Length: 478
Image (cartoon, rainbow, N blue to C red; front, side, top):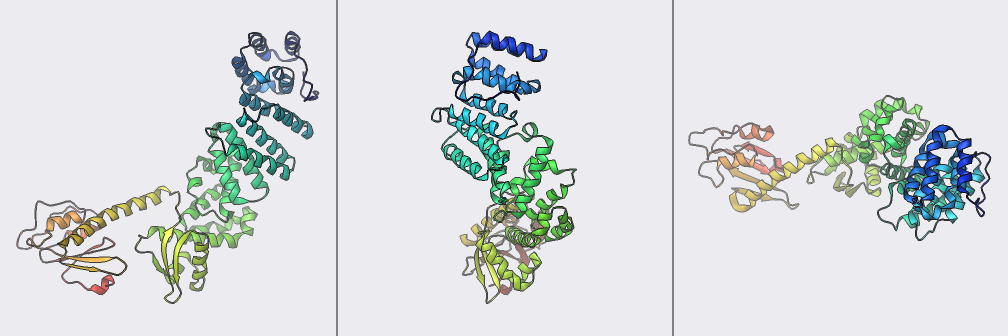
């Protein structure tokens, strides 16, 4: 009983004589495997197909069974393969096929099994086999055959719901490897992340496989011409495989791109020669980090403060001013941002930034902005409800409201303190210029802490609070 000596006959499987098969197996295999064969005899005789499937799976998972897997599958399993779950049958067949060294025999084994699977009744099993055959063809250099089988598998897979993770993993795994072989970075990145979503890296991948996958994902993220959102990869534990290895700097570079930090990029650039493909594409990477810096700069700004001068963008991206227009046009063409360019005033008006998976730090910025919007909503409510002593609204919808602070004004000092989100006092300030009894809480608290009667509170669209004795409208663009 040996896999190396067997010849696969797809059309004429050997007739099973159970007692003869078990006797031969017991004499040819180590004693540690004998309990499996005794169980095979009992379960087959009693026609307990589900239990027999489970016992066969345990046998094929046993490392000592490797030299005997093909024989057991061909001489034993084929006798009753139509009676067991077809997906489990294919899973066993895929594992068994890895023991066949000859490329032609390997493909013959898998295509023979594929021909015996009912495509309509066992679609998942059919997809799993197609994906496996595609992977074998890829290993043997048949890229065209790989793509044909991949497309056939996807045509079925795309119509299925509730698909077994192993089936999805088989398809996305071969698709990722195919695009890697063709150096198509963005499709590799997409399919590789989908593959990782279907497996448990800790149990389904070796340390070497995790390291290789993390390395390749990093390279594809850098070189993919449509990849400008690194958040999903940065949050994936696969990147931990880079820690403590010579490739750890790739992880740092990924975070650098996500932050849009040109300074950190330049600090890591001397390491690029360790990855010749990065060194070769340095000009592209430089442009990409500038685009990331632009995106991050826009993201950090409030929605009504996204008109940026070319000079400001040049400072943020460390580019000459005369290159800013091309950079913004590139960002617009890639649909990373939306907006318009004012070439006369040399300004860019950004109205939208591409949605991204945010890091914890970026979520913190967003949370702070939501808080500011809450405060702005309160200011707007008071201003447009008639409480403001003066209200000026610009054409673009921004406004500046002035509230006179006194115990007799429409808006008492206690309400101003509440408006500033620093707590609300017991009532308006008393006569004689008593100071607000507000507890310090950030910048608003510092502003309001010194408010006295007859001061003016200036509240703008941005939610900025300012206390002064007179208002200079030019300070607020009005």
